Each structure stands twice: as C-alpha cells, then as structure tokens.
Amino acid sequence: GQSLEQPSEVTAVEGAIVQINCTYQTSGFYGLSWYQQHDGGAPTFLSYNALDGLEETGRFSSFLSRSDSYGYLLLQELQMKDSASYFCAVRSRGKLIFGQGTELSVKP
Amino acid sequence: NAGVTQTPKFQVLKTGQSMTLQCAQDMNHNSMYWYRQDPGMGLRLIYYSASEGTTDKGEVPNGYNVSRLNKREFSLRLESAAPSQTSVYFCASSEWRERTDTQYFGPGTRLTVL
Image (cartoon, rainbow over all chains, first blue to last red; front, side, top):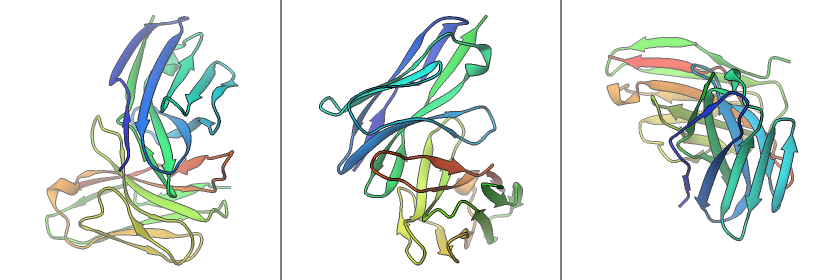
C-alpha cells in the first residue's frame, strides 16, 4: 500500500520561512506533488517533483530525495494569505494518494 | 473554460436515500477521480477512472458506485446513504506524464446524511 506522513500543524510569523516535510512509502513511485487548500475551498496545485532536487516557483520551492523517500515544501516571505492546509501526494499506479495535510497558521 | 464542475454544491439526505453526484470537465483529460474529505482530514480516494470506459476502486469504495459516462463526465452514486458518508466530495481530473502532474479539482459537494 501507500502511506504519507507530514506534520499536522505548523505555526510561523509573517515574513518568515517555513518548511513542511513529507515522507512516503509507495510502490511504483512517479513523483511527489504539493497542494494548497484554504478553508472551505478546493485543493489547488502548487508543485511537482519527479526528479531529485529543488523546484522553485516564486516564493514556494519543493524538494525531493527519491533515495530517502522524502520531500519538503519551502515557503518563503510568509504572508497571512498563506494560512491554509498543505498536502503532499504521490502518484502510484495511476492514482494520486494524499497525505493527511499540514495546517499552516501564519501569525502577524 | 469552466475546468471541473460539480453538482449539487450542497445536499441533505436521510439515511437510506440514494443520490448521484455529477462531475464534468472540459480540459479533455483522460483521468478522473472522486475523493471524500472529512473534517480536519486529508483527501481519500473513492474511485478513479484512468480513461473512458474504465473505473477502479480507491482507498474507500464501499457504499459507492461510479459511472464514466464519456470522456467529460464521471458520476458518483450513493445507493443507500449512511451518516458515515457525511463528508465533502471532490471530483478531480488530470492528464499526467512522467515529468508533469497537475490535478484539477471541482468546488466540492457538501453532503449531510441524517
């Protein structure tokens, strides 16, 4: 089967940097994705890593180490609007399976 | 482009009633998915369809059936609703390759079973 682990909650202050880790166990791994979900809304895509290394998209970066079955999402210059839930997900045998999510609270 | 649309947005059922949740996408994606999300929880895959004419079970298929009507539409049916099926249901579609994988979600259906 598949399993993903990520912290349930993270708190940070505006302007800071925060890292959300994700470890996974899966067969037939293709890549690691990150999604953002604001309260009451639909998840939206943030980033995808198929290869080892860092992918940067504006204030957000995502990292993958396939040998360690580990990845992280890095959020820089935090803003209040970044308060949301963040999910890592793995593609395995055609299915996208999600972690339980990390609730990020950004304080002023 | 509307992306992924779902109907209805809200629904209240009594235990034992049946209903069908509708989902359509206009992005010409081959793959479509149904997830449920309980309060404070992640998204759990109910069923998915890798292409028109195929459907497969996800993590929590019991109590549900699906139909991939055509490439655009993927419906989810609750034959006999139970309070444990109270949840938010998200439909999604994607066209993934080895180097790119973006899943697009509909706005969700908030279902309450009394």
